[in-house]
Image (cartoon, rainbow, N blue to C red; front, side, top):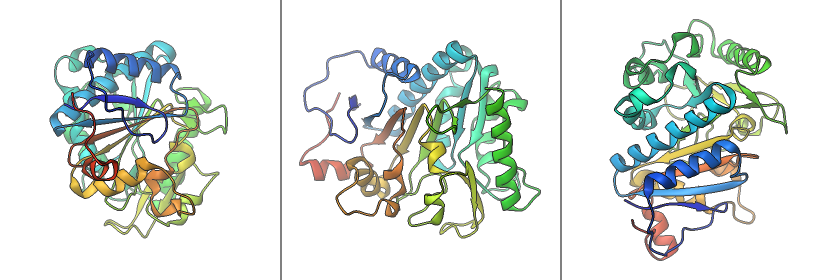
Length: 303
């Protein structure tokens, strides 16, 4: 397995050999992230296999959950769809299935397709089938979009629901901009660099006041979707971006490398994910990290 390394924003990992305890490192990193000690920092974790990635991700999320529950009495997590949900499966297994306090979880979606909840394209259905049905999260703590109204109304209702939860402090609030402050937003990345349903050069990338918006022209079907805006994503205490497979390698490398002079950030939305007072952690398998090996002139540090 490749070593998880704490990094200043967008700097490559050390090439020094790693001689530590992986689980201890994961626990310490999660505790520091939950406490806010990792402000304005990023971290890159690269793994030989997706199974090792999923194992480390489960440990990281479980520790964030434990520490958030201790601090605020609950754990608020926003999910996206796609392959990211498949990596949640380890949390349904021992020891996490018994040790995580699922009754304190509040689940949201950073983006959703405007389809029926039982539709094959629904992120809710994907999450329910692969994760929610296997753990003891309360139904009243699962916040999905209204699939019986227009996508515009669905986005408005979803933002209203989150605003009500912010008012009673079930969801935290950012001290910088009054945006909701989720304990964790878990995202994937597309080959084009999109995150949530924020696509390259889309006007939704420029929104500043809205928490949730809608699009009707997604370049990937289905075309109608709701999505968190960048101010909400960047206000989270912790953001995780998962990238697996060679088709994600170039986009992940460019996003991790950071903005270049005169580059158009809107051409790669993942590069615009920069938590203002939180922690960003990238989880990559070796295939998704392959472009970094080329650009760095060598491979990441192996464990």
